[in-house]
Length: 310
Length: 218
Image 1: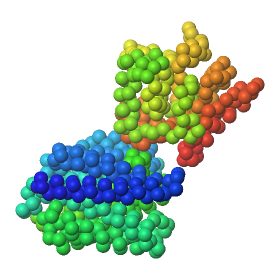
Image 2: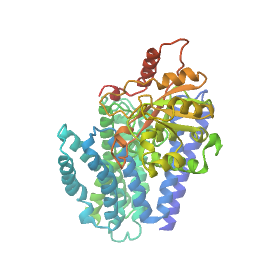
Image 3: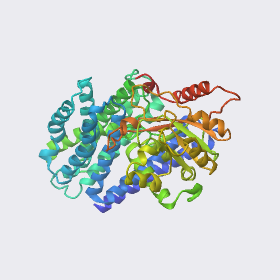
Image 4: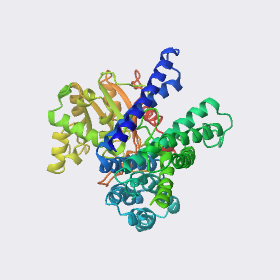
């Protein structure tokens, strides 16, 4: 495992160094002050360095580190999400419960590898308990709206995201001790697909997919992104228990889900009249701006792998 | 820098700890819309709906400015009980004023002017109390006008605190994590001979202008 981890780490550093060099040359040659796109590109690459460093540190601490990292991602994502929802005074206990009970319990269940409970804890117990708690408080104004917003927030920010570290618990024969690499594979292909879709869209983008939702999502970007990310996934098959062909297909599927995640996140932001979810990651926006594709990709990837490989 | 403006070591440490806590819970960030920190002495005047308000403003200030900035708070609240008194006097940087003019022993204006004379910047809530209504902002009391009249050299900076009333409303003990912002607007000056009511209204408008639309029309 350590050899593959080193190879992955060096590969990531090589990609980032290349990106930094290209952006550096572009910035050097460009007129000053830098145009907004280039400024944003520099900020994004800088943020990528920090994110890769953060993920690497978490991986150094093993499964526990990765679970803690994603519990924190869930916390930050839920905080961004709830900020945009309609909350009333009567929602306080439910909201506090989401942060102080649901997040720790969900990630603890993953830590102790209790699949039977962590896979239903949110959609069964939380989804029944949350509206009950809200109803006890007695405020029925926009009840359905408030409850739905809370439930979907916990679904996106906690339940879906928690399926990334949950990959480590999958008992895939012959893959013992390599669960973290499977997580690295999912993150690398989904985030890689985001970047590739962005690049293909910038270079060849003509036909918008849903102009009312996101003007930057084009068919050219989507198709180019998915194809190239599938190639990337196939190239990273050595991280996984899959053959190159299987790895490519799974990467392609994860990227399609990731695209839908980004699209849905854009629709929510458009509805609430904001451009970004937050401001935590310089150049990218909020945590959800970076994690929206992972939110949709993780549970589907998890269950397909679980069904077909365990 | 660390001991700047008369903050004790304990106050600097607890100020930094509170700022850290505020960042964890609210991810607060300042938006400098016309009043980036200059080092000049200031009165930050802000909307008030939560006990966390002055912590957010102080969190947004650079450490040097934070060390010389004190929050103007109600003595009736903070002197009620030994624990509150220790928090207000030893841990936080507060200037306590007595709001009840019948029983008071010290003139609140004089207390605030003394703090300004000692070089302090102030965080001031011109509504005089926490706003518990559906209105975005109550009418301003005269305090801000009196301060501006007495100390025309001190900058008056409007600060709109966004979302804190949802994080920690009145009576709540635990804060709900939500993203907050503090928008610092352009400094205001009292015009030569400007009427008290006109000035207070102008100050109130300058603060409301910094509020997001959703807060003004709710």
